[in-house]
Image (cartoon, rainbow, N blue to C red; front, side, top):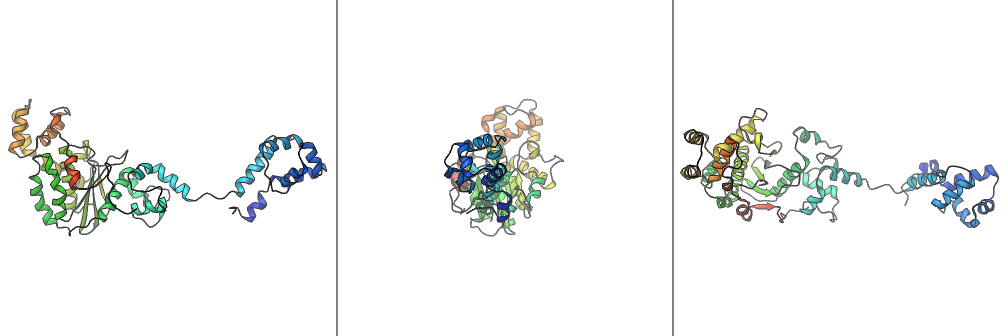
Length: 380
C-alpha cells in the first residue's frame, strides 16, 4: 500500500510522463525511441505507462537520446520513488532520540527493556519512567517534564537508574513507614560499623522501619551513589549503586539517604545524589541546605567529628597505624571509616588504603539487587 496521497501523485509523476512530453516535442513515436535506445518497443511502453522504473543504465541512455544532463532522468526516478515510498514508522525517530539520550543497548542487556518484546520500545520506556505518553519521557524532544531534570543537571543515565530503583521499589511489599522506628534503628545501625560483613543486616533493619532498600548497578556513564524517593506519603525507598565499593562510602551514602528520608526530602521529586569531593561536604555553600544537612549527618555517623579532630591534634603530624587502629577500636568503628576521614584531611588517598575494604559481596545476597548478572523480577 502506498504512503502517498492523490495530490502528491499529481505533483510528483513517474518519469514516463516526462519522457512522453519530450517525445511529443520531437514528434517521436514509441518505436522511434525504442530504435534510438536499441531496446524492444515493449520496454519503452512499460516505462511510458509507469509500469517499469528507469534503471541507472536507462537513465544514462535517455539523457544521451534527449541530449540532457546525465542526472536528469535518474533524479526524476528518485523523486518519484521517495514520493510513493511508505512513510517510516514514526517510532523510528523516537527510538533514535532514545538511543541518543539513554544507553538503550545496555538497558536491554540488563533486562530493563527488551528489544525482542512484543511491547513496543516506547511503551517500555513509558512504563519505566511512569508516564502516560511517549513525549513525556524525560529528556526526549517535546517532553513536558524535560526542564525539571535538565535544570537539576541530572544526566539521563542517572535518571534512568533512579527510575529503575522506583520501578523495583513499587514491586516490593513493606510495612508502613515509621519515622520513630527509623530514628531508633540508627542506634542499631551504628553497632554495625565495626565489621564489613555486618552490612548484610542493613536491608532487614530498614525494611522493619518501612523503608524499601534496593541496590541497582549503575549504568555506563552514570555517577550516582544513591537516591531517596517516595512511592507515597508512607512509603520511602532508598537506592544505592555501591559504585565505589568500600566500607566508608557505603555507610556515608546510606546515612546520607536515611537523613533525606527522616527529613521528608524527595517527596515531590526524587533526590539523586553523587557523593564525592565537594558534593560530600557539609559546608559547601553551593549545595542546598538539605544536602549539607544530609552530608553532616553522614559524616558524624561514620566518624564523630569532635573525637577525630581531637585525635588529629594529639598525634599531628604523624598518624601511626597502631594509633589509628586503637582509636577505631575504642569508638567501635572499622578502621576504614577513620582512614577515609584522615585521607581527606591529609589529602593522602594512599594513606592506609588497604583498610578501605570492600563490602558489596557481603550486602548483595541479603538485598533486593538489580545488576551484576542479576535482574530484579519486575514486569516490562
